[in-house]
Image 1 (tube, rainbow, N blue to C red):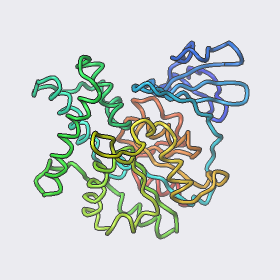
Image 2 (image 1 turned 45 degrees about the vertical axis):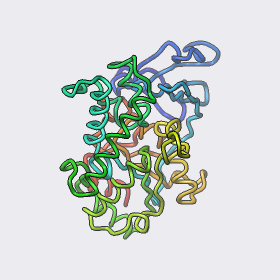
Image 3 (image 1 turned 60 degrees about the vertical axis):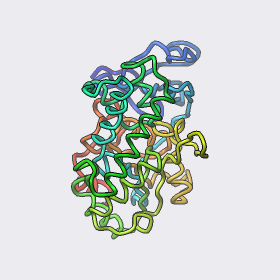
Amino acid sequence: MPLIADFPHLGSLTTEGGFRSLPQTTDGTFTAGSNGVHAVAATGDRKVEFVAMDDRTLAHVRSDLGYPAYYPVPPVRRDNPVRAVLMDLDGTTIRSESFWIWIIEKTTAGLLGDAAFRLEEEDMAHVSGHSVSEHLSYCLRKYCPSRTVEEARTEYFFHTHHEMAEIMAGRGREGAFTPTPGIKEFLLALKEHGVKIALVTSGLYEKAWPEVLNGFAALGLGEPTKFYDAIITAGFPLRAGSAGTLGELSPKPHPWLYAEAGRVGLGIPFAERHHVVGIEDSGAGVCSVRLAGYSVIGIEGGNIHESGTKELCDVVLPDFASILREIVR
C-alpha cells in the first residue's frame, strides 16, 4: 500500500486510500521536509489538506470564496457505550443529493442560457456535501467564468423556491426526498437504547427544513423537533433586504456544524466526545465530523470513495442495519 506518511491523530494516509501527496500546502504556508513538517497530503477532491508534524497534524480547509482556515486535528477514538449519534441529512438520512445536484444543474443551465446543459460525472464530488456558494463557485470556474457568485445565487434560489413550493404543494419532482432504506428502524432503535440523536446539515434552513418535514412525513415519525434531540442547519441566506446568519463560509468540511450539534445542541463536553459518533456519506461531511473531534462511520452511496476520505472513517458500512450493529454492542 503506497504510504504517504503517518499523520499524528489521523494515522497512516495512503494514495491507495485516495489521498494525494503534496510538496506543500496550496497557500505555500507549509512545505514537506521543511521547518518540522514531515509530509503534506490532500483528500482526493483537494478540499482539505493535512500537514504532519512531530506530534500534531493541522488541517487546511480550502475555500473557493477566499476564506480558508487551519484547524488542529484532535485525537479521536470511539468509546463504548455510544451515547450520541450525529447524523447528516442529504444522502444519509434522506436520499436527496440527486435533487440538489439537479438544482445546481438547472442553475448553471440558466446562467449559460442553455436548457440542454448537463453536469459531467467528474463534477459530482464538487457539487454535493459543501455549501451552496462552494458548489456554485466550482460550476462558475468550469462552465461560466464570466458570471459572478451573486448572480449564480440569485438563479439558484429562484429555482429552489419554485421547486420547494411545488413539492410542498404535492406537485414537485417525484422522488426528490426519499428516506434512506432502514433509517426508520435505525432511529427507533437508537431511541430504544437511550442514544441521543442530532441531525446536522450544511443545507440552508429554507431548503433543509421542507426536506426534513417531507421525509419525516414519509417515515411517520411525527414532528422532527420533538423526535431529534438537536437539529442544526447552515442558517439563513444573506440577501438584499433581509438579515442572514453565518452559514455559507463555515459549513462542512469546517467543524462548526458538528461541533455545535454535539457541544451546544446535545450538551456533551469536548472531553466526553469519544462517546459520540458521526454518520456521513460525503467527503466534506467526513472531514467535518473528524475535525470536530468525533469518530466517523461512513455509509455507502455518497462520495466518500471518490473524495478520497475513506481513511478518515473508522469504518464504511453498506447500510443502517450494519451501522446499528457497530454502534450498539
